[in-house]
Length: 81
Image 1 (tube, one colour):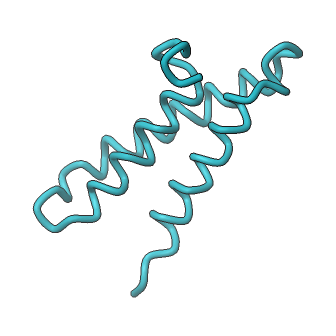
Image 2 (image 1 turned 30 degrees about the horizontal axis):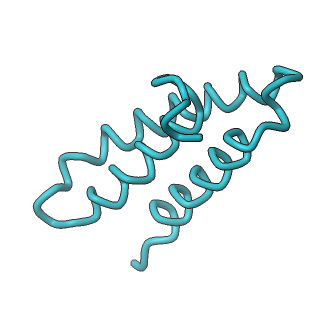
């Protein structure tokens, strides 16, 4: 699924956002946070387009992108204070 996806597909962008957000939590890689936010924003836009498309809105990779974006949100928004 991931390998067959286009570079701007929701699943690829969501995977990138979640991965970069996880890396950006390390003290020596805090500079990656803006990239994670940018990838997240692109993934949200791509997911919105996929959900509007009758062929893509029920596809497995669309569901995977949704799950990955929720992982991103939990990782970024639920940090201990």
